[in-house]
Amino acid sequence: MYMRNKVISCLVGLILFSICHTIKATEPSLVLQSESGEQISLDDYVGKKSTYLKFWATWCAPCMEQMPHFERSFEVYGDKIQFIAINIDLNETQKAIQSVKGKFGLSMPMMTDNTGRVAQYYQFLGTPYHVLLDRTGKVIYQGHDADSALNKTLKLLSHDGLSKQTQLLAAQGRYQPALLRIPDKGIKGVYFTAAWCDWYLADSRPDMSKNCINGQSQVNRLFKQGFTIESRISQLWTDTHAATEYITKFNVRHPLSIDFGNELFIENSISIVPTLIIYKDGKIIERITDFSTHISLENIQ
Image (cartoon, rainbow, N blue to C red; front, side):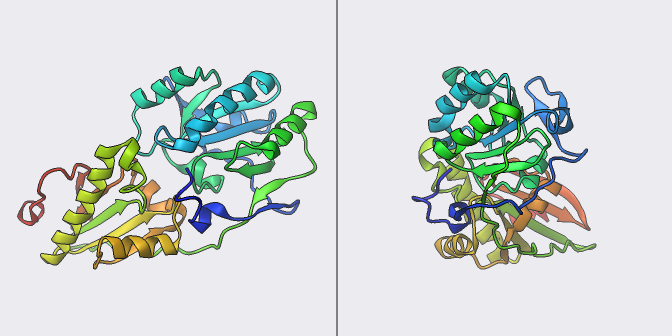
């Protein structure tokens, strides 16, 4: 998904040609969920033949624009390259996924990254995201565009499954995620959201957009009432500038930081933004994802 004409720098990055960048092909813990709900290991595919992983979301406009290209590419190269459509499982429904499948006549394997670990492993920052691996499992291409560079790499891989040349996105700065401290005694809330969910989803998913706005408003109110709370925003499509804009836009006064690596999102199984998790004496006692009604401080304490 391209944000505001690519103003978010972590998505834009220069594309570099390199032969020194390496990402391991896969590891035993990397699994995807099939349409039937079966857990599928990437080891079943990667390292056996060339593989094309495409990360997407139903509410991502550029993803929809690229779907005809994705299906045509599968029809041309599907016998030589393993195609996998990977839904990122964020604010998704199976109904929406199946609707996209039917609309574009998608015939390649379709899976869901329901743990978020596959996207994290392949350095995912935003949809649409293309990752091509040669038959040895080496990542040789990363990109967001369905362009001539992608087409060229697909053609090269279709011959013998190898490519001496790699095209990878420039490595982004590495940041350590802020430590999340949950007290052994007492009540604390952690609010998980995204810096873009209020405005990007306004047209395609207006109810989700409204929920994001309501959620931040309620969290601000709870903090003013004395509730201990902090926020983590997803690193997807987000950099420090976007986080600062979000803080200013919503007048956020409680602690807020980017969940670099999306580790906390993954550990807490966050598949819906926003989500407010309430901890009591170090344990989760409640998850709130619907902010359409008033949240009372008395009720959560």
